[in-house]
Length: 94
Length: 149
Image (tube, each protein chain N blue to C red):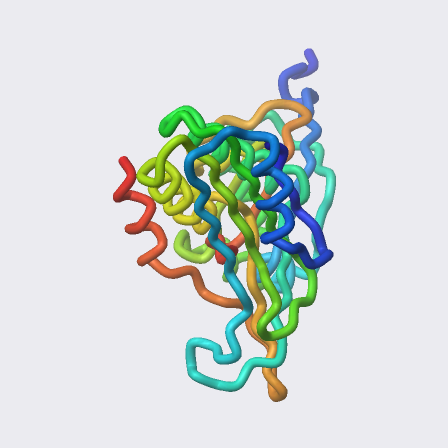
């Protein structure tokens, strides 16, 4: 019997800005997430597995902030299909 | 009312004069922020590079504007913020608030710049003749915002 659940994937768009963008070397990407990725925190764990640049950037909670669909959120925020998830440093405008 | 996120320079005086004609306000308060000629280590600065998150920036500024209008019953608010490469002395951000009385106008303008500092997704990179680096956020900015709770 096939395990249907493991086949369901969720498309999300990721954006990276400023210091985060420079540290990891890309500004955007699209990902098909497995169903075990439920929150931003799960997504961060996945990204940390990509190598030392990612690991370094996402290991200290003081160095980055996150937004889902252009609203600032905490890492416990749930991710849904077609969400726009962004990672960036604390804001320094004005 | 709509917010303005742009690369071009702006003239806050003429914006204020134009908006003044549309309202029967008793007071206006304006805030204008410029690129300083020194950085946090007191090194001489050549320019500033401002990055932002298109879409979220406009959304965040509009939310701040709406909060201020509701809280102080303002006649009008104008917010403009630039991005891209800015030279020393150039304006970065401009805010104009129109209200019935001075108290509302002063408070709302102060509120808007405090919220903008922590909620609008802009990032500054300082460029000196030797190097360039991203500016770190100040915890002071978070504290300034909390005053308004």
